[in-house]
Length: 411
Ligand SMILES: [Zn+2]
Image 1 (cartoon, rainbow, N blue to C red):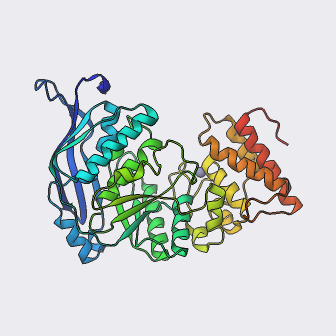
Image 2 (image 1 turned 90 degrees about the vertical axis):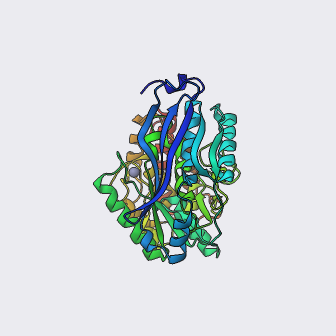
Image 3 (image 1 turned 90 degrees about the horizontal axis):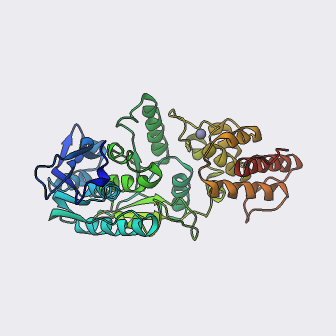
């Protein structure tokens, strides 16, 4: 790929905008190119695929009201593409021009999001312009929640539901685009569908090829919220709000792709993006929310290292989660979803892996294990107190210290 950041005064142009229903799937798409508006002779740069697509699958599974609302949106309303186009443009120092209709709330919010990016990371602020304003859609009262079966979204679902504030729809991102369209992901999706059915809520399946455009420019850590927001904005007529489980605890947010100051900026007039903080702070406290849930013990899936359904039990994220679950006595989840209790030797083996991602979360769990080893309680959380358990807690804490600091002798 050419060094696109060196192209002066370039514009990220999205044209040939359209919404179409293809094989029971709503496809919102536009052709995307980096162009030189002041130099008609310059060759446009293609980015990723020829067309950026955001899709809502299984339209026939939606109720009639949602179906007709989805289909009543203007044919060239490509509001759902705005978050992804904006993130791509910010990486290319280009403004976004969309030859189609866009909700002005979404366009203005996306521009503000790049101002936030600039303040945090120095990425250039960009503007989002469209040929026409899209009409807002009537509200439905539906409330969605992104659901991946991970610890955060599972904890939000359980906590919100027990507080009488649960969603009406779960929203799941399926990986059907290269290079993620591998056979194992079909098993993962089937499991997510089964989990939702067992919980008793409809699961709306969404997908996008956005990563084809984004991954060469910025990592998933920074891009996942705009990508999820894009799929949420396609749910006009199905839900009015879609919740994203917060990554960081309340009061401890740091500049990140998911942040209470940033997530709502990806909203449109018809669909709001909510940063959900209605779960306790910290991974172990969230583990406590689902510790006694037999449903979570059947479906919890946190691992990004293995493609197949389930959890590998050996990666940092699995091992951090296992320690949190162990601290709160979630024996059934550990047995069913991770093959048993965390092992200090497996944790210590991470010491050779560099760099260590998620240092803050890792240090937090290490501190909690140390407290458990010393017989302290963890803010009211259930902590195992037998002598044998305290010995294991100490060994686990030592192992994490080894990973965090390298060179600490493992007991
Ligand atoms: Zn894993």
